[in-house]
Amino acid sequence: VEDVLRVFAVVEGPDEADPYTAEAGAHTLPPFGALLDPQALEGTRIGILRDLVDRERTDSAVLRVFDAAMERLGELGAEVIEVSIDLETQLARPDMFCRRFRYDMAQYLATLGDDAPFRGVAAVLEQGAYHPSNEGTLRRSVEAPLSAPGEWDPPCPDFAGNPSRQAFRSAVVAAMDQAEVVALVHPTWGAPPARLRHADEDYRGDHSQRVAPATGLPALTVPMGWTYERLPAGLQFVGRPWSDARLLSLAWAWEQATQHRRSPEGFGPLAAGDERTP
Image 1 (tube, rainbow, N blue to C red):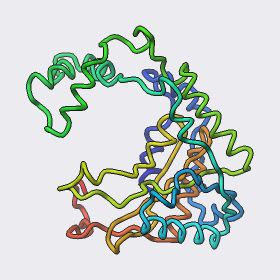
Image 2: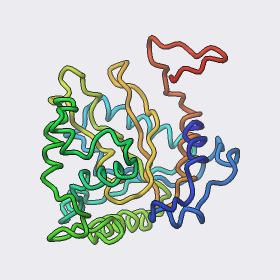
Image 3: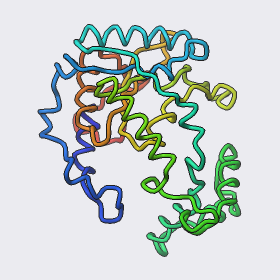
Image 4: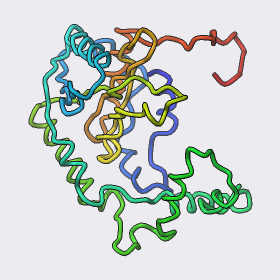
């Protein structure tokens, strides 16, 4: 979490090229040391997002680790309660997402001018410059218009003007208000990591896509424990708008108290002066 804080301190704030950061100047992080509070969880009301802890569909090992994590949160002074949000209904709202990858990529490549490695997504397909596992995604992308999503027929509005995404966001915040919690928690994944050789068949349980992306709410994942002795499980904290500082503080307190992270096998600590990228 300290690494995240150091990066965040550099990238936070308004960006003239990104109108969604216009309010960021009013929500800067407090001094670094103020966020590293080992007692941050003490007296904090945290909601278990029960809709993402389905005991029939979630892997039993993940459930055991999550239950242990909730007990540990209580030991660290947090008041843990259950919060329910009908995520299936929320995610079924119309026009929640746009296929805007083709348009966004074209806009980015245009900023590179002559240094752009290719003209757009269609050129990647034509040149065969992609991994076979990505072909389906790329072909679906080129089915979308190259114009701005707001100009499509019918238009696909951006986040701020998208009534479905704004309603979803409001529903989550309202549930948090009603429960009087500062954050929601849920397993980042409801299944163990997929094996590379069977990634398509075993790819399931990605809870991290269910709330934060559509609502634009801040979220942070930290190690929650281990399943099947060597497979990591993550605990995701989801907060209110602009609650990044509070989430980082809660996550740091959890990380320091539990020490679940293990260094990857086969990679020792970097020697002093070693500038290789880990």
